[in-house]
Amino acid sequence: MAEHLYLHVPFCKSICYYCDFCHVAYNEKTADRWLNALEEEFSLRTFSKNLKTIYIGGGTPSSLDEERLERVLRLLVPYQSEVEEYTIEVNPETLTKEKAALFAKYGINRISMGLQTSNDKLLSAIGRRHTFADVKEAMRLLHDAGITNISLDIMYGLPGQDLVSVKKSVKDAIDLNPKHISLYSLTIEENSVFGKHGVQPCDSDLEADMYDWIVETLPQYGYRQYEISNFALPGYESLHNKAYWYYKDFYGVSCGASGKEEHKRYDNTANIMEYCDDPLLKDEIVLTKEDEAFEMIMMSLRLVEGLDLKRYEQLTGESFDVHYGEKSALLMEEGLLEKSDDHVRATKYGMKILNSVLVALMDD
Image (tube, rainbow, N blue to C red):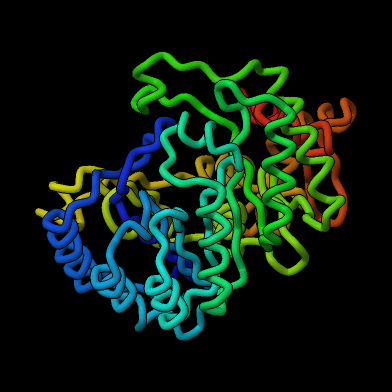
């Protein structure tokens, strides 16, 4: 059975202009209907009692009030006795002293918080409802509650953002001493507010310069890059996200969540009203060996350590070289891939153009 569980909270107090995740504006009536359906889903499904990680994402889980948050957290108690990492996503302006205490009470030991930028004008321009001062206050509340394993999200490539602004945001983030930093380049999604208004991200060369500067700078402050967009102090890599990149099975719970179990991938309905009527409604795909091989390579090469060739052979029943030996050899000659310690990994340059490397490796 899977050892990892993701639970999606589909509510937000406000909608960020770049976001097209499954979310609805928070109101108590809809939240109560969703909670009733969530409780029904837990009663109808079977989850492992030996979970290693739990991740509550969204949406904005911290947009729920204390009473409704506790209803969610109580549902997970039977499954968390062996959990090593228990994460919840937080938006700074929605965190209170009481919510921080509630997180600690229920054993949450990791917070993923959306900083995005320390420039308050840029925050407003992308639809965020917090200021950098709110981030600092949220960090204080969490530390006071005894939760110090905090990851901060930083965005780059925003409209109107320049390299000076990115440098300041990164250094402001480092000054807060998070244990983990995740990077996100702005992608304009068709159904987002930006997409509907034709907003364009910054110049691609400038975006590349931003990424390069961040990748070079964070290790100077002790943050080791372990995945294409993720950096951590020693011992603080995200166990839950590594489960995705290692291509392990995981449960997806609630509307808008996806999961992978027993060679099947599924997407729960993203329509909250459909979910409230039928919390088991989902689309399911049976994965072939070819599907799994493709997806495992695609996910694992995002990691600095790369693809574990022994695990690949265990999953697919054949050596990596059977289908990819010739192409990978050419990419190694070009300095884009390397092989050592039973792993195939992207080189430093290969990581920068990983999408092109993946196309060259797996395109028939």
